[in-house]
Structure formats: C-alpha cells, structure tokens
Amino acid sequence: MQILLCLILFYGALAQAQIYPTKPVRVIIGGSPASNADIFFRIVATRMGAIMGQNLVVDYRPGAGGAIGAGITVKSAADGYTIMMVAAGFVMNPALTRSLPFNPVRDFTALGLVADVPAGLVVHPSLPAADLKQLIALARAKPGQLNYGSAGQGSVSHLAGVLFDLLAKTKTVHVPYKSSAPSLVDLIAGQIEFSYPTVSGALQHVRSGKLRLLAQTGAKRSALLKDTPTAQEAGLSGMVVNSGFGLVGPGGLPRGVIETTNGALARVIQEPAIRKAMMGNGADPVGNTPEQHDAYIKAEVAKWIRVVNEAGLKAE
Image (cartoon, rainbow, N blue to C red; front, side, top):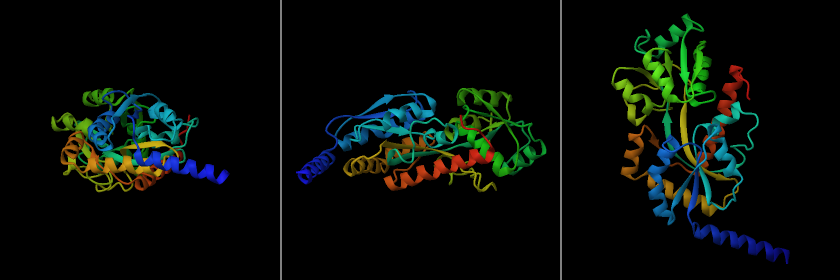
C-alpha cells in the first residue's frame, strides 16, 4: 500500500509538471515599479507568457534589498506558480545581513539569468584622473580624502567601492545615499568625487560631459560600451561588479517546471527585439541554463562574503 501511494504521488507530480502551467504565474519583484528588475522582467514577460501559455503576473514586494520578496518566495509552494525576479541584493545580502530568514544557495531553485548589468566607475570631470590608473594613484596619494557615493549601505555601488579599496590598496570614503539618483546629482555637482552607478544610469551624463567614465566593471565589455575598457583591462585585476537579474523559485521545484520556465526564457532571449530592448536599457541579455545560474549564485554569494570579511565590515 505504501509503495502504491508513493507511485500515485510521484506520477501525480510528474503529470502536474508536464502540463505546467495551467494558470497564471505570480512573479515577485523585490523592488518598485520601474526598478531595474521590473524593467528587465517586463521586457521578457509577454513573450515568455505566450510561449508558456499563461500570463506572468507581477507582484511588487519592495524592501530590504529584495529580502522581503525573497522571503515570500521561499515560503511559497514548490509548484512553479510563485517565482521571483531577483537582482544583485539576492547574492549580496548574505554578506551584510545576519538575520536573513533564508539561504540563497540552499533554499531556492535557479531558473536562469535574464540580464547582466555592469557598473561604471565615473568621476567628476574636475578630478585629475583621466583613467583608472590615475585614479588609483590619486587615491593612494590622498588616503581618506576621496569620497564615493552609493545607493545606500549594502548596495552594489557600496560594495563596488569596498572591493575597489581592497584590490587597489586605497582608502576612500563611502557616502551612502537613499538611492542612486541623489548620489549622481551630488556627483554632477562636485559634492563627491566618484561613484559606481549602472552604466545605463550614467551614460547620458557621460555623453553630455557632466561625468567622466573611467571603466566598466563587468567581466567583459558591455555591448552598450564597446569602446570603454573593463576595470580588469585597465589594470585592476579582480574588479568585477555586476548586477545579475534572474528568475528563481522556492527550493524543490519539479524538473518539468524548471525546464518549461527556462526553456521559455532561453527562446525569448534569442529574439532580436528582446535583445535590442535589453541592450537599450544597458543590460547584456543572458538566458543561461539553471545549472549555470545556480553556479553563478553560489560564486557570487561566496565572493561578497569574502570581500566583506576581508574589508572588516560587520554584518547587521
């Protein structure tokens, strides 16, 4: 009887996975409308929904760097009807937050990276640094005197500065803001010397001459900035900082759900109109496998824990 029950449950789950989805899929966004996660998800959402045969419905759950939305996702049923579009905070939060009610590596199912967005190292034009090597030399000559702005404690732009100081053996001063917009305003006004916004967020100000872009921080050059060197190409080995936007679900999703969702994403990412929209918003389209996405999450979580520990920062 017990064996028969197990077989019934197994084949029932298998059948459910094979016909998934039979109703709309809720996609949690751990930010507000028009946030980067929202923008990049909406680029692929309509076409993914068409391929999957059901609408993908956004549910905004902002706060705590995406941790609120992730907390809801991890507690959802492992049936594929609640997934989440995560951003950089998903892999960075464990380094700075002791009380996370989940483990990004252990408690989620990776479904595939959607987009990769590098940061740009931008300075005020008055700063006597025409390239990255000159900025490093200047920072070493003036320890504790150069200020960089960020979108807040624990943000991508904050940890980019932490990594920069570790690798360049410099000591710069972190000035946290409530978001990236006011930090860019003060940078343009000359109130701070440099920052690490997304390349898309900084590009208009670079083109207008209000800011100077010294390097981009992706592992490779962004399609948006083919003529701008990466920080590693400019001489700072290991300076790779990006925002990976991807889809995850609660742990234990059936294989059929994983394959259906990732298959739709992989198809959509190859469509020229989707790729053009992604790159127009400063992102490199990815669409990798669940296994590659899982490896990315593990590597990024480990990396930022190591960086924070080496810098002597305390998790809150």
